[in-house]
Image (cartoon, rainbow, N blue to C red; front, side, top):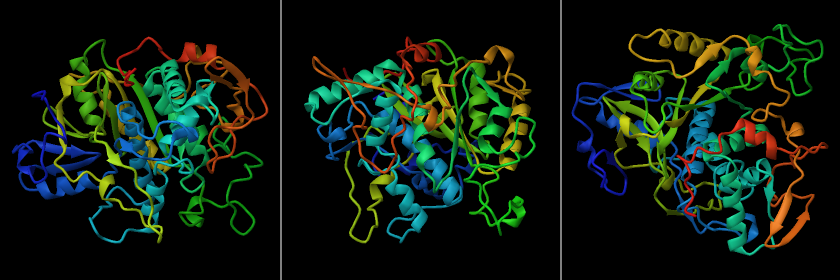
Length: 449
């Protein structure tokens, strides 16, 4: 075992004393703990995070595809975990705690159902695979042999870096989750543009921030007219779509630049923190906090049986919560390619996040990991925003390749609860993706090919 890395497979349940006895603060997703006096609270907080791992014996992807993601799905599982944390914050709140054996709230069960490994779950591995094939212009038909299906999925994953796949797929899939009504923004080029986010989360405003004369049809109404946020119940208002902000970063060449370490650690202190997707080459992890110079993370590299809901619609959820001590890794050991996540439930949360980020940018002895600007710089202008297209703009006429066969299809390979996202227009993303994504970055190639 790597001395710098402690994993679930090498730690036994009940060895919580292995957590360092230190007076240094422990930060987990915006919450501060004392390792000397709050060990039980730390374990409870870690256990309450949704833990998505490899699964086996789930329905075949595409009908005849793989029935397990062992060896190739760790980055996708990390993407599920960071989105799962956003949904928990959205519907249950950051202070919600999971207690084993206790009846759970309906919102919690709905969140878990969205991640079950079947084709009609919003954020299942099956749906991510479907979206991956669409975004990379690679599809397959249900009659393909299993090995052919798996190879095509792998081909699709190779066309973009895996971090890009996770970001793109989650960005697209959340559009169809009308219950959560999330706005997912991917900030490219190490730059967060406030104007872009305001447009995304408040789409009925014009570029100057004034209300449009005719708000979109989905905008809620109260007694036949639009009202301010204070006049509407929380679940009725849509004046701000809760924001999931993902920022892909490269914090060094082959190793993390030490000048970014303090800034990265400070991200876990922000109340809006969703954590970080990263890890080592061929091994992705979901980082949720730090203590001293060690990052605390959830490890998806454990294969568990797929879960089916009970007859009463309850979900056996023990395997979706890590009840072991949290894993740790020295911060200098991580790969420099990471994706940092934040959740802003309200506009005030976003404004507070902007204020905190600007303060961090002036911290002595550390470099800012990304830039926060009011408006899009002129050199960023482009005709097509590949990462933040709406479903109507994301039309793809995809090719189905089964061995030597070549054909086109009007139907998606999965028949879940989502509408088809092709739209009326046909776009060829093959050349555009070359410009937007660094396909030469092999640091996070996680497939066993």
